Length: 308
Image (cartoon, rainbow, N blue to C red; front, top):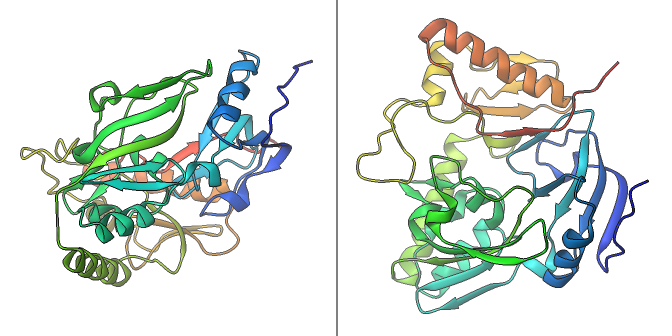
């Protein structure tokens, strides 16, 4: 029998994860751990038996947890990890800080991290996925990421260590990202806030922000687009090849490809994780049949399918 550490934070057994994801689907995790602070997390990871898998989870904005749940200790950072501080043009944010909050606080101080304003989720996820929009990527502004390793050590990683690519980065297995430091260009606070207001308005006009989704379902298929370099191109959009395959508005059970933006997978209210992932796979198959393009998932899917 596995002996677990006795942390100061909250350790829950057989914890359902559906209410912790934006799509509101998914089964139970074997355990959910919410550490009190950095030292609590260090001790827990250090003392956790080596064979027990760890899955760091943000706010679940880009995640499908399968209906059979997750055979792991899910680690979810909370209040002890959401601080935001600004020093000149340097912004340091805890991994649990919301992207939108970081963008706003930076703008207040005249630092331009406005691209983060419309990205759903938290800073940990933004770093992990090299999140970006409007031609800017996390990789462009990140200076340092701080992690706690599976052995309980605190390490600082450089952008080179993270090996940023389009919607991807490399983190050591089982490591939990706890904070990130960014450096943004200077800007007038009023102009930065005005730009973010305009971005939000455009997002609401073009994306199903009132529906239960997990943001973009598939990566855009063309170009390099790894770090926003000048040679990155994204002429071909995922929504366009989905439209061309006739899959806008397609549905399976309670899952639907949004009629407003066909690269958004939505839970209309009764979807299971199997419905959502199954519809995504149908879309991938149809797009391949019609265009020869293999769409890559942007939404992370984890856990086990439900067995009969």
